[in-house]
Image (cartoon, rainbow over all chains, first blue to last red; front, side, top):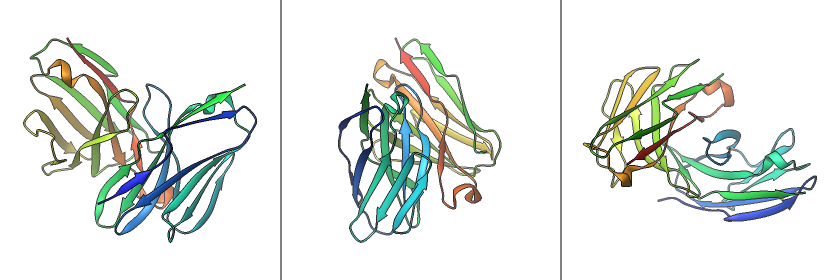
Length: 110
Length: 119
């Protein structure tokens, strides 16, 4: 089976940097996705990692270590609109589904 | 690219009635779509995987006779909640597996969701 773990809640200050961690256990790892979900809305795709290393996309970066079963999403220059839930999801080979973590609710304070 | 629409965005119905929710991929063809439900402050729960032209694959514990899924074309999947009851009230979200060349992966793109309230 698959198991994904991420913190339930985090708080950070506007303009600062925050790192949201995700650990996973899966057989046949086939990529890790990060999604952002604002309250009452559907998730939107942020990033995808399948190889080890850092993927940078503007203010958001995502890192993956397959040997450690670990990923993080790094958000820089935080803005109030970044207050949302961040979902970590893992794909597995031969399976069309993604397994989602419970999400990290991030609150940005002035 | 990879826009998914969902209709209706919200619906209120009486207990015992059926409700149909449509999920469309607007600018790409989606052989595979997924249906999720989400309760307040909880994560997404996959209900079923819908493949065009074949029967849906339901997750354990999801009643296939209650949640009817039809994926009749490469751009449309529907979820019908039959004989809805108050406990079926939830946020239903569909997703479609997007074109590989957009991200180099089987990325799922989500519709805006449908909030169902059963009285």
